[in-house]
Image (cartoon, rainbow, N blue to C red; front, side, top):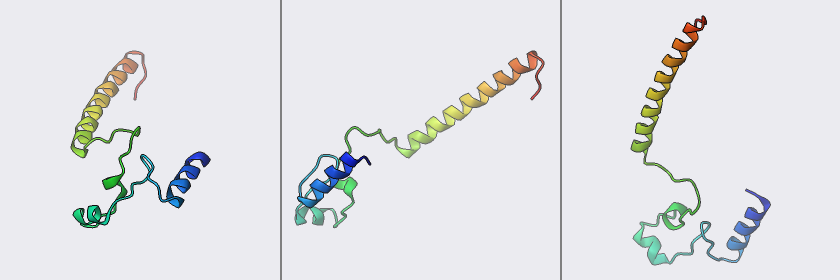
Length: 87
């Protein structure tokens, strides 16, 4: 965190304020509705951050990238072989 970020977090915390993307003041009833789960991600939305992919989608993309890498390696070895380089 930058010094400015630390200052902002401290200000929000010490003044018991809400800060977008930082904190949320909730009522006891809201906590009870969520089985008293106080995980920040349940109440504080992260704006401007990286989008998080569902695990299943990330695995599919990883497998596709791996297949593309294998094909690229084959082509590279072929070209290098034609140039007289052996791997």
